[in-house]
Image (cartoon, rainbow, N blue to C red; front, side, top):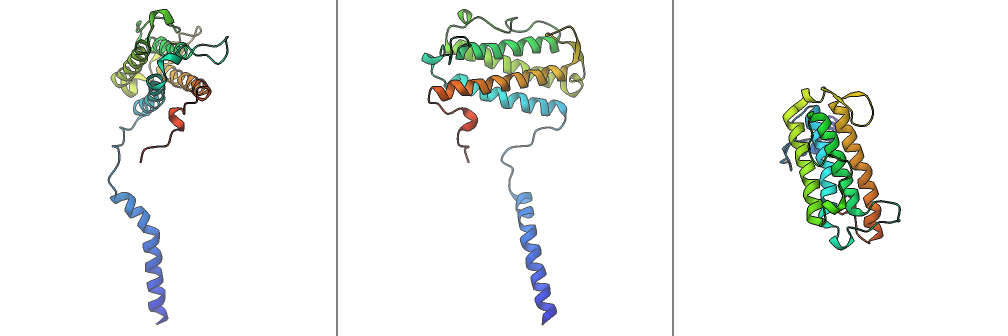
Length: 192
């Protein structure tokens, strides 16, 4: 009797412990896992921050595109133009040839509408994505001239710089959102 109770209890405990693991292996994946490797990881980070910024660019009201929290800082539109311009400066360094507007601060007068700003930002993201895919893992180790200073770095360093820079500006734009009573993309409830 005692042996039977012990065996039943052990089986129950094992079933409880292994059920979540079994359920995880049997549940269909919501999204396919990205390819493995440094380029796939770089692309994942690049797309993550870039898509947050594109969402901001698309849903911030055009009437507020020239809003700035203080007189001495960039407007909302100028922030996005700066991100796209800086991305292009770094993409150009990785590619080894000029891509995009050729300045880290494309002038607002050249990108007059919300649609113009959104288009430039999307194109910078698209061009960066294509270059990461084209060069792959090996491309991340290429030595390039860093556009900010007189030094040589790996392409990986340039991508890290671009991703980190975009994250800084996302954080700044959160303030623009909050001051206008808008919830930023990363703070919104997630879809289930």
